[in-house]
Image (cartoon, rainbow over the protein chains, first blue to last red):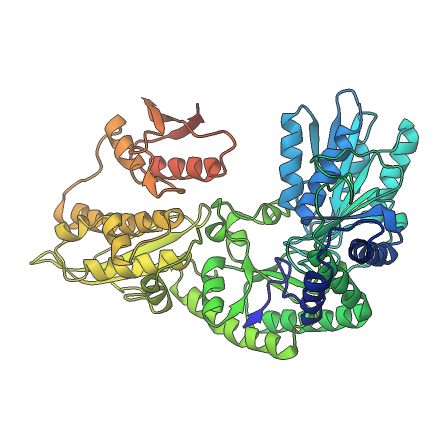
Length: 393
Length: 210
């Protein structure tokens, strides 16, 4: 199988699986004080906290592990807004965020919050001027993502962080800034001070860690309330027995990620460039979704193939054991075209023909070449069958 | 539950029967639209003495199930008289494919609509039988039986989701009852507009969720 859907989820690395197995067998006790097995489990979690904290310029006690990035996003957004008492509270995000963020914002709107959804340009970059204009004394939260999962755009997080810091100074209160880094972790380095983030969400399964684990960075001093309640022995924000096996896996995944980070990013970029060049040379009537070159995540490519529909392309590739994703309405559980493609100005027809290819550090040149070799005749064939014709024909 | 295509759907998608164009077709009709989703064009060659469908072909701008339903519907129609072919239902087409996921049932409706439109065009142009009836509540109701509720793949009339149909000098008002947060609300409204707009005499379609 050639798996080019790594922005959805990744394979668990063999070393990660081994670390999880060891944790399951040797570190199954609940983290606790004094006893050998209890402290052993506690140390496992501390080591993982330290590793992620070191990678993002934070300290150990600013990192908690969650059940997923979705849970981290929920804790960050609900916990932080509920910890503030603001008259007529307003919350800010963009129109192209991950569904988890948008779902929490919709829930907060029902609770009486006024939400602002920042527009993006044709390549998916936030309109930072609009961000600047909506911040005021009522703002209770800003949440933005590091890399857009559908179109690969690397977002101006630090620029937004400066704007938020400036506005915070102006109103005399810190406006909490949450960054969703789930799709960015694979290819982007993060320094929480440089970005001026107060809260950052992470996902394990996007970087060859297991599913069922995420993490949340909470800057020291950030006001936040728990959103679920139970035993607080591990963390008041994430009560209950921690998933030591999953955390051990996430820890190993982070270790592996940074062990060869620059080399992997460079290699994925060159593979993506090879795939993009092949598509451009061999398939006419295409549209690149998202920016080109360095402004796009190194492992990400998304093209719309005009006059045909993406689910059919995806299914043909699937029969050849090549896994991709599409923003077509036909493949969506809602029968709606992908909202991010619509937000960058694609019409329904252009969104229907979109295919997303996302690599991992395990992707090789042969994967890209085999994908191209299959993709070209699939597109030609579906175009020959289609009711819509290129204008020239 | 995992949403999967049957082996038969995959087979027809992979190697669709009757794909292509009939030059000098006796009738041809396109249903759906690229802006709303899928589109299908059906071409017919008809033996005028016997009214039998000698050849039928289709083209599809659509997903795997759109292509598969186009393939099966043309298989079913080939060799039949136009009256028999016109009587083929979307349920029949879906059954022939071993079933479709409820969310994809509308593809079968589209394929059947394409075939029926082509047959009716032939009947109108060649045999002088005019199918276009006057714009009234009954016609609109009939048309709305072609709009399926995606979670179950059953039409919105049978499901009693249509609460009111009003017509005033070509302006059609349809009131439906769908949860305001329902993820299928927008695509269903789009489909109602698409279907009702096809009826002769319709000047505007207004769908209200009540």
